[in-house]
Length: 385
Image 1: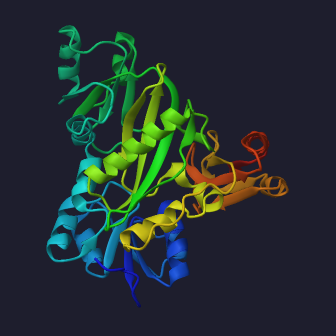
Image 2 (image 1 turned 135 degrees about the vertical axis):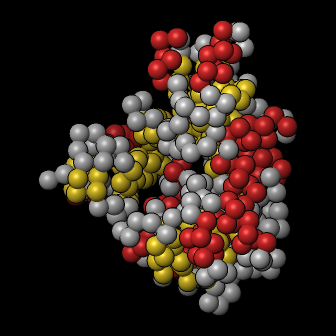
């Protein structure tokens, strides 16, 4: 494919959340006409998209009809009607990443089989149809405690995952076809974002370390650069490049890894889209993940992934005790701190632990960035009046 950056290019983005909004912000710099499909009329991306189309990302007709309006189709969410995408592709629409890759990502069972078949290190696993089959496997000692159950489809942001430490946790078991994997003794969690264009050129972003909120099971903050060894950095980067190559994928791929107590690198899961763990790239990397995704799917030369400054990114989550019209407290105090960059997603309603925005904190050293980030966390909150 030649470069897709042509006059009057119509780019379609399925779902209009914050990822779509930030992708459109980059696309507008190149005068790309953007279309967004979302069932919520006040979705974050609508305010800046060239065209908004009301519809569901899971409805066949909505996705198919939306695809007929554009020249190039991408997405900011995994939960998309695959059959509609396949039909559009068969009719000649350029869809990136390819629907076959999205189908693999959607199903954690197929995803785990991909790792096994391609000698990608991942935790041992089996697939079970229901809770009864899991309990039977425990009786037969095919499953040992502790283990993690993940629904094969539909889970995101910590949903669709249950950690079962012993029989007292059986009430946590999830209904549905699942992957059951051995619980990893985690030392660190890291993320690698890698990009590939249709010519096969690959660029890998600096590795970030993720710190999770134990209650919300969401990323509380991420740190770049990560404090891992050179050997671990090389292994994780090479694995990311191997995965995107073996998938023959075009676009941005975010891969979450565990580093276990032995220092081994283990793939947890991946997403074939821009990712929460890459938001800091807007300010801290020469080329943001959003620009890199556009460069990838338009088959343009990939941009530099050099780190400009150490950064800490904080997810701005809805206060756990409030639900209603969003009010932001502490904005001015945070802006008075040098190197603080605030991104609000434009969601009118706050809910407990809902992602309402993110804050990137830059400094000359990582230690200074961490110190400033702690101040920001104590100053800012999202509540209601």
